[in-house]
Amino acid sequence: MIQDLAGWSKVLELMPTAMFVRDASHRWVFVNRIGCEYFGVTPDDVLGKTDADLFPPEQAERFAHGDDAALRGHEVIETEEAVHDRLGRARTLLTRKTCIELDGKPHVLASVTDISELRETEAHVRWLACHDALTGLSNRTALFSRLDAAVARAAEGTARSALFYLDLDGFKKVNDTYGHLAGDELLTQFGQRLRGAVGLNDVVARIGGDEFAVLLEDSGDLDVDGMAETILSLAATPFDVLAAKAFVGTSIGVVTLGREAVASGEMARKADSALYEAKKRRNRYTIYTDALDASLAHRREVETALEHALDSGEGLSLHYQPLVRAVDGTVIGLEALARWRHPTLGVVPPVQFVAVAEETGLIGRLGEWVLRTACARMRGVDDLFIAVNVSAVQLRDDRFADTVMGILAETRLPARRLELEITETAIVNADGGAVRLLKRLRKAGVRISLDDFGTGYSSLTLLKDLDVDKVKIDRSFVQMAPLAEDSAAIVRAVSNLGAALGLCVVAEGVETEAQRQFLRDAGCDELQGYLFSAAVPEDRIERVTGLLPPVPALHSAG
Image (tube, rainbow, N blue to C red; front, top):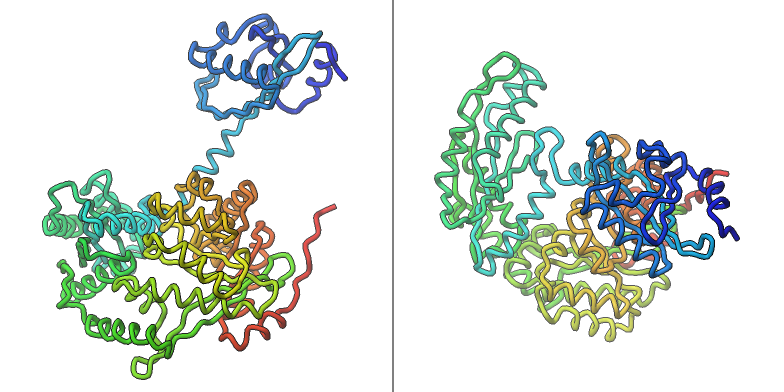
């Protein structure tokens, strides 16, 4: 074992990273060649000196504390910090320190790695996940994350907000007349105008080709009409694009978020309904009221029928979509998906009756029926887990964990075979009580999966605190991953994040062989989508889980 400085020096000179040794008094006693090149110094510049001689006082003090911790604990101490090099450039350094014995005395052995490029890449991926690449505005995912929080505050009566949906009138003519570059420039300029018209805490998002949204937070003087008039004026002002003046207008649909607000999807639907009305005459705004919603009577009929279905069980059923192991295509689990066929309403889409259930308070009963039915069915399917979606509204119920544990006991399904899928925004905006419920369930063995993952970089701390088992990459990234580099970067980043945190990474919406190959190579653990199977009735579970063709296993190179 090497115990003198001369022996360590020979070893450290061979290392491909910056290495240095300091004694217990924080004096530099060795720095290797890579370290000299990295810091831009010679050994004579640093040997025999302390950090106080070489760095600003505050920085030197931090370095000394790190040395002392390594000397005391005899463990590897790892720190990451932003510093400025001798040329004034901001750098992010990862330093690892440990205690070694040299000539019978304790010394600090340290390595320094520049991870600036890695952190810059991570920051760019975080930005891509929640911004529109063309305009730099928030994207739909980021908008709905904030909208979920605004709905929760409005329902509690702590704040009011307003959601504006905008659609540019005459934009297609600009594209056709001046070309798509001019159209892109107009969209960017309009986004900048919107951003300048609202407060710092308000959200401006591009949610489609020429569709925008504004989420206006209540600062004590929520002026919906005033903001709508401002936006109309901003759109009517000519745009200078490619040495030409382009003229457009906008139609606006507005919904205010008050105590009646329950689900963000329903608020978006109402804003879209108001926008549809405004576009009938263009260049105007319409504020949502129940009177203009042509589907209101239908929704009331759906509510009554759904309540009857929950009482009788008639018409409700579950379909099951397989989840497969990425490396070989083996079915390892099923996701339970609610379906409803009514005698007079016909097949009611889940997006419609789930939204009604959330808004009317029926979601607790519906969720309980889905969970009980799925767990009971899985008793006869060996070795597969069952995934069940959980609404953000259900998480607000203090009895939710008791309900889950009661159903598991009733159906005699082991907790380890149940997976609860919760949307990312629901967890991010969950209060302390909801977080405690999830931790309690996970401690009992239930697995927690984060669904529609896309903005999770804003919730990494919560991810760690919850210790979730899985993250599900949103289908919008999955389907574009083989074709669009930004989507590919996000998929790879989430896969790497999952590996680093010990999480299973699931990709949903897999429809082509190219997508499967890309996702498998990117490191996804599980896949789900029409490529393998659509959701099937319960009587076809055994056929689907037994007939999927195997996929050749991966082999490491070399």
